[in-house]
Image (cartoon, rainbow, N blue to C red; front, side, top):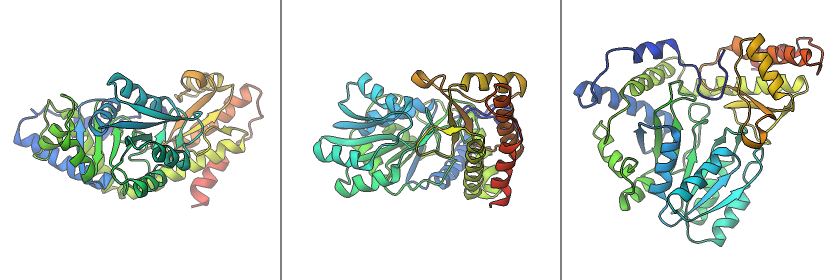
Length: 369
């Protein structure tokens, strides 16, 4: 049972769609698939433009940094992926400043506002919607609104790699939102997607940057239902299959509702057996638990109960474990994992197993909604 926060399991119907005959990317047949996939992405994002890139999410992060920073960047670092935005700036000698917090702490809107008021050179802000290193949710929409009221020309770029397909995002004040195929979209890794505002498109076209990750080139081509470079044909076929399936089975709103219920139920179940939620503002993409027993619990889950969950990274590598809620997670899988965690805690002498976790999860999932 794979319950890591990416890569997520690929549904059988998606695997079958991708296993069909390979289509050349410069044909009317594939252009039709590309067009239909773009239309579904416009529904998912609710933004003015969408671009698909044959890369991981990090490629889309690089594209946004290089194409949307014309003067100076502000990066928000509350984890490994917020830190990555700063590393991209360094790699391209792009001037930047950083607001840095511990991995369980979201950025303060006031801190962002104060920073941009004191530095008129900042023309782009880079932040995670969900910082998956610790599973926290930044107040991105509130921050973006406050920034735009001060300077509407500052581009707000949000890494939504573990947020798109998880929750409804208010994109009113966002200029770019990034995601990757291997998270809530339930595909293999290798496809990145960026939703863009009209203001972002104009800024990109004003000063195009790069070669492969030149977004001006891609926008121009993708408006004609093709790509500047070789398209990730198989993944795009799979993307169309998964988005069509979601739309035909209750729609995106139902997916968001189901994910939110599962996330809340899991958090409540684990709190009921004495677990500590790590982030101060938990995202619905995953549940992150802080415990020195994380490695031992993960080992028991994998070897005894056939459950694969994620640990941490860097300085919290052995201090947290993370349970995925993204994608089409079955109810029985959510129940199985909290039950297995309680059994593992019993085996480690942390508490006596009495079925509390499973009971609380089921009550929250089915009686409280």
